[in-house]
Length: 163
Image 1: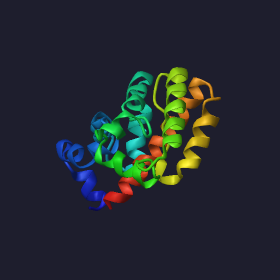
Image 2: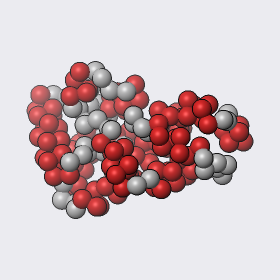
Image 3: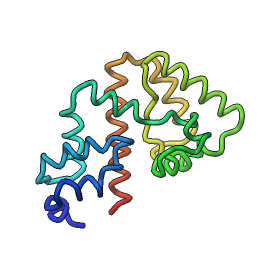
Image 4: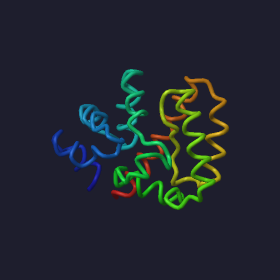
């Protein structure tokens, strides 16, 4: 599908095609539909996200699952999240690795009141754990900014998968 075709989609078709790019948050894509025409789809989608209120951005961040968390164990992750976590080996953790993820997830959620977000396809288990430990030292505003940047990377890779 060309960019001209994407820009010509009606809102419902645009949301149907791209609504799953943002974890459980098709509202971002619905808002982006009103910003067309785009010169670049990813840039347009991220513009819609950055125009959202802080509470809406936080809701998107909170819509993401914890890494190697309950949703992964219960197999209730979205198809995209399950594949992404598997790509980093998070579906094949040793008991010690699982315990470390659980501990860091709990500490992160206690500190920031939202899950740790990283584009797992751009790293591995060790890189994720190191980033979790390092980012626990961030202040909340910097961590929200980091989460938003990581969501941008996740969306970029999901778009590439659709091409």
